[in-house]
Length: 634
Picture 1 (spheres, rainbow, N blue to C red):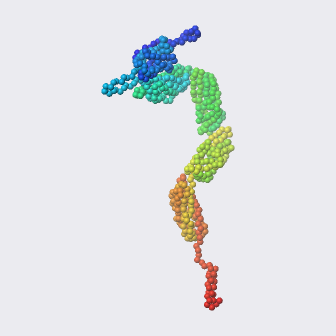
Picture 2: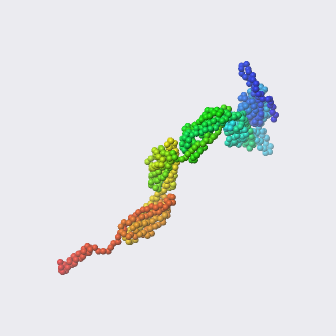
Picture 3: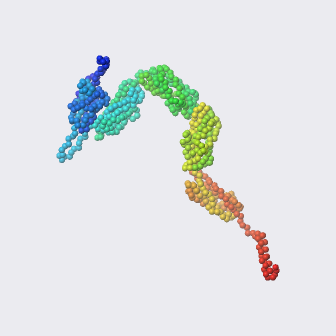
């Protein structure tokens, strides 16, 4: 391809402009040049978009195929315009002419590139000859990627700071781009984060947007620099194409010298701080640099050490002159610092200068921290108990907490919250008759108080050890609020439900005579109980075979024991039945039941004297009757 360009030195307007009679300065027409055209081949069947690269393009620019027609033209920027070739244009190779003013009459605003675009007609279909028809050739064309537009935020970037570049990637080719990618390889500017952006497929005449964070290295002087952007894509046949591009970025350098702020003095009120104390931090700053510092922002950069006491953690100062001073005061609250002594606190300084420079620094200062309890309250859960003990699912209980102040200062406005701060972690326990928060007006140093709370265990709770957090919030005598979380453990055991008794009445219980004790143990609960042994004892009886191993006893099942007993004396005797089992924590437990038995004395074979007299009188009367009948007497 031949290229005919109007080459001339770039006109630099360095002198005075020509002033017209109306007082308007006459501007010279732009100088137009063409560097290259993509794509070089366009199908006449489908038409397509041609991208013309060069310089001097304006919004009035028009593109013409010499010998064919003027094409619809779109202005992209000063270095790129696009022209649309309609379908059905005559095939052939055309010279391409570009006019910046759109008149094609000027000398400097017209550029021409010979044999720049070829319009390819359809491939003729061969007549059938009996020979296999070869596969049609691949139609010409490829994806053509270009940066259609871009922006930089901020528009003027400062040395040492980051900025974001946004580019619009446009496919001006005649094929879709597959595996389209934009890469920022670095160079003058340093990429921050991922440098490659995969866009997958980019259709013809489609646009994709990519943003990338970059950083300007220190030491770079003011000026305009090119940011390298590498665009690449494949077509559907797997052919790979790369399009290196650049965008211009304007940089503001630091020049000679800079402001430099140094923390020259620090003090706190009070001087010695305790965890949770509110205090004021005063900083004395001096500008030891050779430029005035502007728009100074001072803030705490260690939130784990101190947080704002009121308002923001940042204080603004308008300016600090060279060798000048500034004093700022920050209201802060010390965090829950565990170690005493000097603690480092980071202070952030952000400022600029009148030349557009920007600076960000961190400096450390020391705080004097004491964790002693001479004048600070410290609350401690000394002990606790539950009634009843152990707890069982569905059962109410009373929790008593012994709270002691082991510090050296009085605790005021004490809030005891079961379930931790907010009460959201009560587990299977629910408060009864009141809320889960208890209030104590004051608790002097060395004193204690019992905090009582009525609770109930959830009926569906599983047996186990449950941790119950307790939040203690209180004020010291200076009004500083302290929050401390402590924990207690509550054991929930499933209580067995047993029916213990005689499975038949005790009969023939006579003194000094062996008799049976028919005892059974029935699990009337819903869960299995691991019973080890059933033991029968009595202080009034001598018992044989009074122990029996039972083993696991499911709900609704019974274990029976028939012991033999001998009573030494008659009367009511007590029989103690002890059921030994393992609870939910595999600890041995015992349930006892006391039964009573009536023991009778043995019957003696003696004749009552009155009965004898009655029998003797009866026979005497019978004898007298017989004597009367026989005439022997009356």
